[in-house]
Picture 1 (cartoon, rainbow, N blue to C red):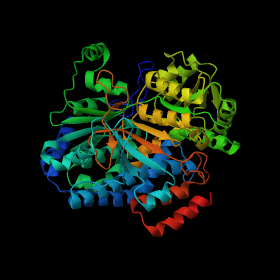
Picture 2: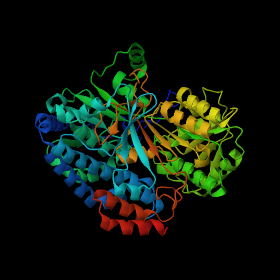
Picture 3: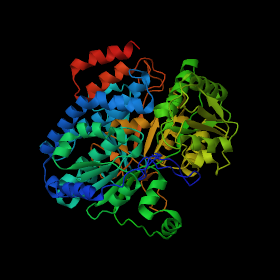
Picture 4: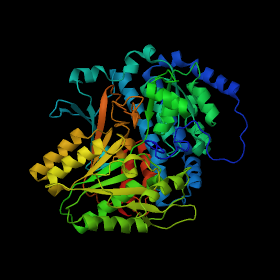
Length: 590
């Protein structure tokens, strides 16, 4: 998740940046000796953690779930206050789901995976396992039982494996940290994100329970107000000596990345953050990057930025379908005020689609109705100004508090202008561009859009394809869409559902498409999530219905969704049939 890409806008700290933020008050010098003591405390537990069996680890995760549910009210209140969200509102429900619910769900899935390991030696997964036409394995991980079918109706998810993974090696490669725990022992530093409250804690769970490392997490200055709540939620991990939480700015981050007892680093931030950590800053850092001479000689994983594309496959949509998809795309933009690496950034449409203008008009109307939100993330105004300077025709939509920025829509960016800021820089604010491609048929448009996303649009984290069932019934179009899903070089792909759901699910993987080098890191390297603990995933594909009824509670336009999300988080903490009626009634009465 990033601030800027390809250098068009100067970074202002990044979600995972070891930088200080915009305070005008001089901070006291960090107590590096005290930080060293914390690192030593954790590192001393690396070997014993490696030998802690799966059953004992699952018990710790159960305690994490219990403690998070006890801490949720204070955690949510702090996040809402920082982001200017009204308690009990739809926006607060969104924060509850993304900021806490996704962490609780991931903790539960990993708890269940560890119970499987304790019993059978490997995590279970839903299945089946299929082969794509090119031989890549496609492993279905969702739904995994009746509860999944109820909470996410008509939704499926697969993890596609890298070429060369066979059914035999798939099973053998699962949960490698449990097959050879000593070889995976070590101490990981997590440089946490500043935007989504659950990101840092989720990274902690991945490092501890999937990869077998003890963890030091440095909070981002933007949301370090969450540290007391993280400390309460993960008190059992702190008490076990396998986690320490550190606060501070640039000096602390730099000290930790170079610490002798830190074995590896995980970054959630921008590609500029990654470059600063791995190669250093300024002209010398640039020289080192060009020569591939890193200053940090440790393994580094990273979840970085993306100019997230949404391919809109033309079809004959009804007015309710058109309005639904306008709300869908608007949600992809306004979630968390646009401060997401997974926010929709480029709409790719067909120039000859008869309903193109109607769809963009509906999107404009939806954005006009959605209240703008506090621009809490540093540098948002400057980043937005950079886009408007290049595109003065940008539409400013919506209204809200004085500390908010308007939703910004830029229509008709010429696709041939491949160096345009809209295709090359992640704005990291409430900005969305649209480009339209000329193609002789719908199927050829899908192929052209796939190539455009792969070859022009920056980043490889996530992409969404929207296509109606009637279009999929056309043989050539259906084949083109499936070809697109297979060929898109993105770590997560959503078909009729925002690719952000791949982040939320936890059983799917979340991270860049594999293959980036450290001198061209783009959206990063490595994955988090991955509750089945696959060792060679390539991407995740989530498919949903073209139109859900009732409207999903995570839509920005869903009325009174807070109660639904409250019940959903409680359900995710411990699913049971007794909780289903209340959840369904809350969802239906909106």
